[in-house]
Amino acid sequence: MSRYRFAALRPSIGGFFAACLLAAAMAGCAASSDAPAEAARTPDKTAAAKPPARPQRPAQASVADDGKRIDVASAVLDFPIEAADVFDGRVLRIDRVAILGQEDRGERFDLLLRIEGPSDPKAEGGRCRDGREIVLREISFDGNDNMITGSQNFESCLKRIRPVAERRFPDGRVEYDLKQTYPAGDTWDVYLKYDLAHPGAGVTM
Image (tube, rainbow, N blue to C red; front, side, top):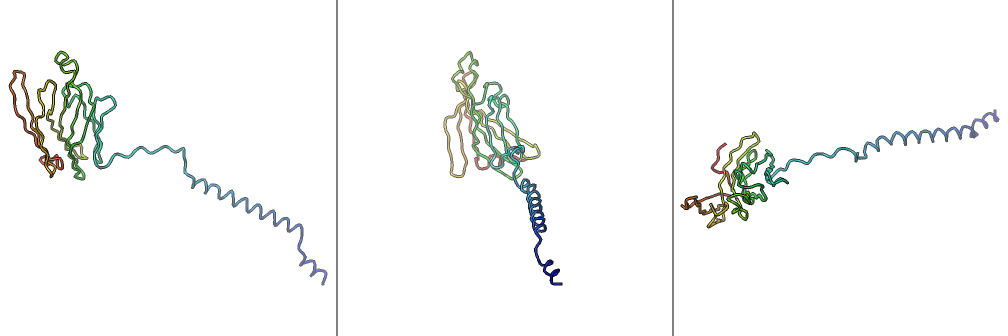
């Protein structure tokens, strides 16, 4: 009896190796099972980059590379303004645009743009080659593609129209006095008034 009791308590070498092999196999399985989870946590650098988000607020305006248009981008609508629609062929390309005033009304934007370009160098037998054309353009638009625009020539080649005075006020209002000259030589005084903080205050959509 004592012999069998002693044999039952004695550790088996073969069992010890089997236990080691079993532990190693279990550890290998655990490592392999963790690998997919680790890979899932690793960001996929080859994934396609998301397209840039539409500019939000304030609205932005920029000249296209070819100078043939202006691109306006906002939180509610993106749209182009063609040079031909602004200058009626008096310029070949736009070289500058500035937003003088804008109001964000949530689903509607009101803008006042100053759009500039060199006069067509071949116009008037070449006399306009050093001239500039400047237009002030009011735009009101919303996310439903509703749009109201209005333009005023601010400066033109051969001084057909030119600014002669400017007055600015603390509340954002600005006034311009222009002088317009007609082909016969007659002149006409033009008075412009804008509210840069609320450029579309008088526009109903």
